[in-house]
Image 1 (cartoon, each protein chain N blue to C red):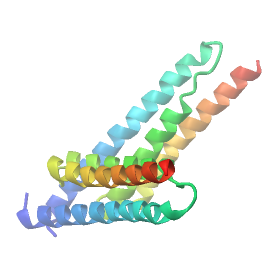
Image 2: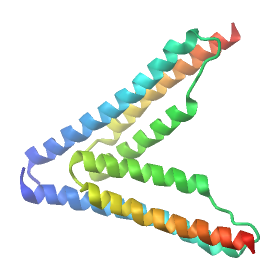
Image 3: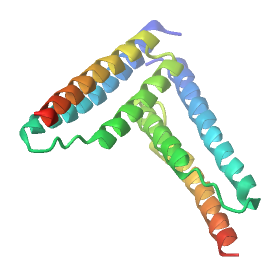
Image 4: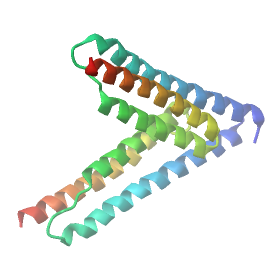
Length: 96
Length: 96
């Protein structure tokens, strides 16, 4: 395998996955901004679906040998933390 | 880009997607085999989830430039036809 070409595909894979992860972060932020509303309109199903979709993309990239397993896990872990923070903020808001 | 390496990644991407599509075909066949039971235990949610996951993998492979859009669409179209046949068979069975 020619190293340059492998790096080219790898970079593209990482950049696509990061872009897709950013879209989910934006969805989470939109939800955070709506915590001031009477109910917390958590689009849990939408977020779960997007997380599942991204996890399948990452899994595919890992199986292709383009993305390291630990890097893929790191992308999902970061999103999981953001999601936890959203749930926590919403629970606190609801309890008030 | 070195052609051989690009072909290598392309072949791997096609073979992974075909393998994932085959898994869904098997799920559909299992459902078909259960049509003889009193109810049709259509695992619609399971099948829908798997179809969505595969469509995300295909979309990712197309965006990476590893898989042609028409080939990705052909994989999904074939599965959609199998799913339609399953639904039809189940509807006929229920009407009896």
